[in-house]
Picture (cartoon, rainbow, N blue to C red):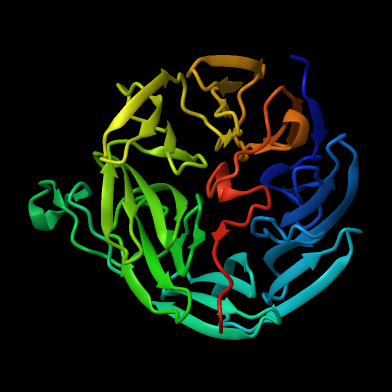
Length: 409
């Protein structure tokens, strides 16, 4: 295979990828420190599949993930230097198409936005100190339809221990506490499946997180998960989700039904893919020293069918083509796992990387991903992206994790 094409984002780290459609362009968000002020700034770039940069826009601060509309626009959630929260659409020409300013409490942060068929869903947090979060549903003009307040929840886990003078320096489970900092989870923080929204928050210090199930029609918080070291998540459709957990002696993925109840549990965790027949597969992420990680099929009864062993741990969220072939970046290599479950290496990077984006599978077998400050474009023999509810990270090329009928206000 030929060397990939590299588009360098100067002195930056690529943090998000989306695409208008399979023909591109690719939207890249990258962050860097301003050399004069030392403050973080975000660059949004549009790149053709040929590797040509169409345009670039610079924003103060760190913006959320790019959400492509599919008809020429791309949205970002961000804050102005004065703290004002903004939803902004950039048009196909690289100019600002719409900017919606949203009022909020001074210590609230607009963390993420996803695009609904008839508006937006926004997720917020607060602090430090953390005093709660909220999820909003908004119309196309940005006006709030409802707001779901999430009060500060206590965290507790029987595997988190503490020792103090009060216990004679003997280790015991730490009493429940309210986190000082509770941010949106870095993997799949906000998802929509049918008339259900899943919002996931995490404490950085312990890694414990909680996922909240919200009625998309009314804003009612239906249920929440117990505190756990939550990991990758996915949309199953019809109000159902997959939520993984990895850490504190837990390594599992659970299917939650529309009521927010556990329906099926598998002894595995990692990045999930779903084919057009509804079969879930997982590329395991397991940091236990003795773990033998694999690509596996998650069977309906909660059992697993083993695929090939996968070396290493540093993995990008993979993509699945319509022939059943998986493409992923793992352990410095671009790999494919074919329908016969044979692993082949297409390319190997010479140096280790710190940040890896999700994998995009575009037309004519073109594969794109971000590695540290570079966008890499590979030309492969892969087929088109699978036509399913979750064939890649974020569920689609647009980077907009929504599988929903049109909602009514």
